[in-house]
Length: 154
Image (cartoon, rainbow, N blue to C red; front, side, top):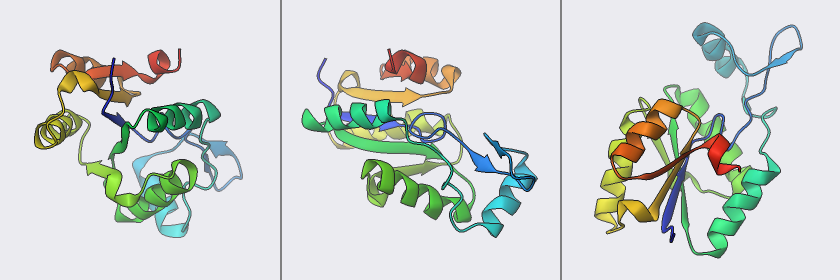
């Protein structure tokens, strides 16, 4: 299969979510209120997150085959947007202009379809990797070559 463009989610795919809580523990997240406070208090919210070496290698292999790498991530807080974009660039070299922000997971499918239409890329030459299985199924039904992160890492 030839892949012209690959879309990756951040949290749970490119990033292993790890955030330091007030008690000093590191957890994969917290409540919505905790997340807002955490982002207001910290300028580098993603500093404890990890970029798996297997994902770095996969991105490098895709780039070697001239695949355009895009990020498609759900985010609502302006505080987080800049921190997430900085982390993605530092760990994967993906620039801000190649990050697409969505309000909800379902919007990812429409954006992929529009991107591919505008750039004249057949959906079966597009790869979408996410950690939310229902959205992977929906994207696959729409004709997008979609993989859950667990399948992608096989």
